[in-house]
Image: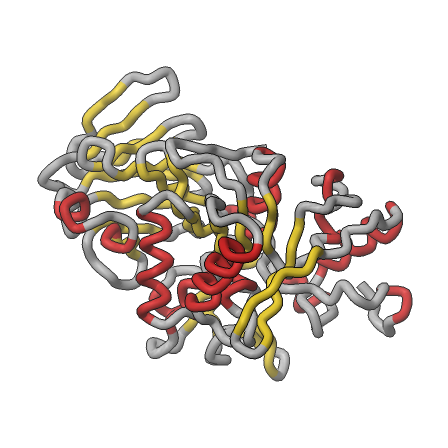
Length: 353
């Protein structure tokens, strides 16, 4: 289990931000704020909240919502990851006294997190007539065979699709070809692709998707403010990520997670991270305030411009004296973020997996 916690205070409420923001079918950060306010009024006025979001939520929010998500990260109250479910449940395991606010029953996670069976810690926000109330979700224990087929269902194909060609498509990373789509700004679509007339398309705009490298070769880059994790970004094979003060394809804009003074210490083109055949390298791009490589045993080396430094698990890269840090995740790229159909047992469907 890979989990980290820095200087942020221990949470008393862990929030599943993506479904909360979409309680009314849209993606509105106002619903997150309303949920926090309702919990403070109805349950605990002194609650300490921490949220976990799918990376895809950022692209569904309006500019104001994206700004609010960034504020939560800067204040060490949230992180974004490729797939929120396991991260959220790991945090809930670590902070066993915290309540969890979500809409999910996590049936396909009950083998990995057996404490879910019979728990009374998990609450569902219900949005009715402009107000939010909370219902305790029913986590009555389910038999092992049901857990097994729900895991199988979650790992095979997205809801509504079946067949070998779909499973083959999910082995790869995909990019959106529509420059007007928000996903085109990312090197990798961080949702499972959609399928139209037998072709793979963007799940957001339905434009043709471009196939990239095999997903198994993707690496995750973890970003930290000091020791507090804020982002996990996938880096496909043969892809690169430029870190600095700029928004564009294949870039990580530090202004979304750093305040003005801190962001100003990062150069426009500060550091480049590349995935070459499954190995990750960091390259200093001639920044004003420099970059340091911190080895697993603590040895610190200042990176020289244009020289690629291999990055292994346990090692860290510190930008501008450590105001922003990154490392290589030890986890494999999650296989997807879709919501599988977990309501109908496979044996009641006319599907062959």
